[in-house]
Amino acid sequence: MYLGIDLGTSAVKTVLVDDAQRVIASESRLLATASPKPGSYEQDPAQWIEATFATLDALKASHADALAAVEGIGLSGQMHGATLLDASGNPLRPCILWNDGRSAAECRILEQRWPALRAATGNKAMAGFTAPKLLWIARHEPEIFAATKLVLLPKAYLRLVLSGEAIEDVSDASGSLWLDAARRDWSDAALAATGLSREHVPRLVEGSAPATTLRSELARRWGMARPPVIAGGAGDNPAGAIGIGAIQPGTAFISLGTSGALLAPTSTIAANPDRVVHTFCHAVPGMWIQAGAILSAASCLAWAARLFGVSEAELLAPLGSRPQAPSPVSFLPYLAGERTPHDDPAARGLLDGLSHGTDREMIVQAVLEGVAFALADCRDALADAGIAIAEADVIGGGSRSPFWLAVLAGVLNVPIHRFAGGETGAAFGAARLGRLAVTGEAIPAVCTRPQRAETFEPDAGLAAAYAERRPAWRELYRPRH
Image (cartoon, rainbow, N blue to C red; front, side, top):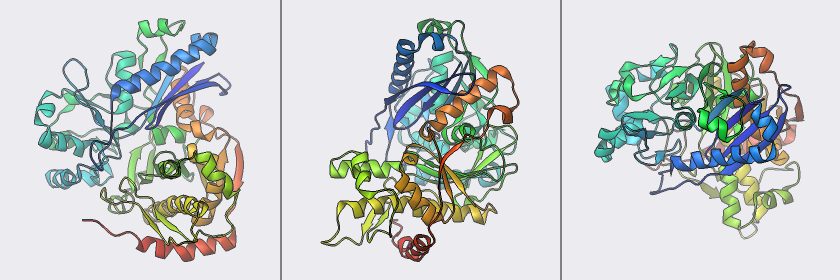
């Protein structure tokens, strides 16, 4: 038996997977995000631990025998967050999250201090990444910076609590701007540019490697026969790739979670930081992932549900299974700023084309289309790096909506595929990494591609209508600074 734990932004999801790679049980607990100022997003690390322990306690109550047989644990998690710890390993402040935009000015300072940043990391300095957050802390909270002895990404903090060791995998670390992507190691120059050294960051391992073991007292709490191995794990999107077997060049997938991304594994680095294409190490040794990222995806639908005072399911039900034509309303999904291709943390959302005849269904469809148009921008940025997208699989909570996937097929004008259980892709991928860390099996033998549940082919007429609409949609964006 193997456990996969995904520390997401909106929830912790834990899955229990057997030797036949069947998910036999899953539990999730919601997380809260604070926004102390517009554009700022934080979470209390204590709630990550509380939520994770709650999922495992629930699995013990419902599947005690299976949990007792767990041999390996894999972790995945939201990327880029800055968790600052003191000399005793206690958080000094709430974690600054991936979608936080407060450190835009520090990004410019960081690139000035370290001119080799883009060449070494494969990324442009952006407010979402970890390193600029530390410059912001040094400038605005100097007492916190001075007390900081260790900086961990969210899942590394979870691992510290579970095992007592500070360890990170290279895929998550490559979203910090402190990693030399080609060497898959910390860059001393990058750390120095933010006033840090290797003493402030955890030990690095590959995602499928054994990293540590669960604390004995926690193994006893959950009735495990012996402390399971904990794998290196992965950032949420690389873990999602592991979950759907996207481990070779020529595959591409869309993540429709709180945020969104269009991702393509590569055997060499195909960086395009000027177009805000991200370069991450894959959780597979010797592989990388190139990605276009948007900061708001399924969270846009959640926003609309709050606006109308109904559930997301109630919003989607009247739309049916496929759009007949584009909505007369247009929506910019930049509710928390944007990355690809604008790199603008100050960008904000917009509804355009409202009239007395506008109804709720038109607005909801526009929200889904706006996210799809933003992903088309990511597709174009990847194409500029030489990565052509001919089809794409979809994972994340948004993959449950047939209407949304039909919209994506029309906007991107490529076949879109979904899997049964695709919303647990990152947790399932983490469980696969936990298995690999225990068994040492060949990665392709474990990271197979699941059977696709449904394919959404683009409708030629709808694709043409979206192609005609897209230039006007792109004109809606105007920089606010």
